[in-house]
Length: 85
Image 1 (cartoon, rainbow, N blue to C red):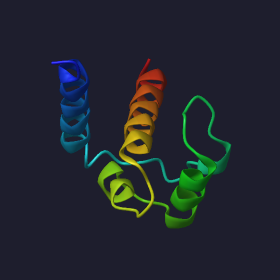
Image 2 (image 1 turned 180 degrees about the vertical axis):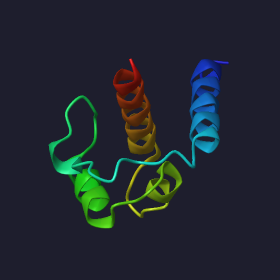
Image 3 (image 1 turned 45 degrees about the horizontal axis):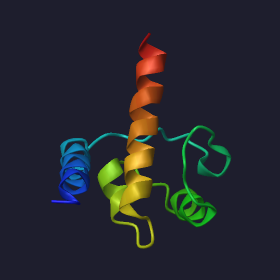
C-alpha cells in the first residue's frame, strides 16, 4: 500500500512512452547542449552518437534509462506545443 501511488505513476509513464513510441525526434536536436531537460551527460552522449529518429528507437539504446526517455519525451512534446502556439 505504501508504494501503490508510485507504481501507478510508473505505469502511467510506461503507457505514455508506449503511446508515443513513434514520436519523431527533431533531426537537428543537439543533445549535448539541451536545456530544460534532465539528462545525464552519459545519456546525452549516447543520444548524440546514435541520433535516434523516434522515442522508441531512443528507448532501445543500451544505457539510456527509462527516466531519461520520459524526460526526453516530455521535452520534445513541450517543444512541439510551443512551436505550434
